[in-house]
Length: 237
Image (cartoon, rainbow, N blue to C red):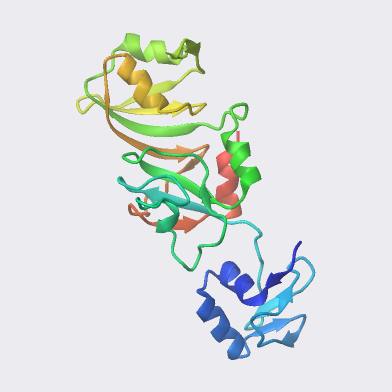
């Protein structure tokens, strides 16, 4: 593992601001291999050096995985000169270089967005051959007929290409709300396939990635760092 500045390691591992990390150093709370260190810019090797704070050994993660409850009006991008992005919503204390959304939601779509700096993991969950399911709550213009639902279950056809089956279940038929599970994520797939049936999408909200649901405690715009156990649920079969 590459060397990393001690204050950066503390900030990322403890979810602290860089200034709070430096305060712990000044207060002699940090030790490297048993020796107190006050030098913020000293570089350490997290796979070799034992870093302790107030006597407790800390575990450094090379990558971070963040669940964001995306609100409407925010774009799924790392940077945008004119729009607020999902990465802009990540608090400074857990933000790090290289963050990006693993998959995109439209500007008006809400719900679960995974933000990470791990390109390999993003590829594993987004690659067409991996078929990690994404679950959405979809509000339609009218009720979907049994024939239309069966048509999607057989695999919708878009641009003359037959796609993987789409599971559609009724949540509230009176309000035209459905649960939709995609096994692949084509461009605007949900909106396009229902529009093709003459039933435009009114609202779209991603509720789950793989087997990991959006945390109901997260308000729109809020986020949290995922544990290893939560992360594993995304790719669990």
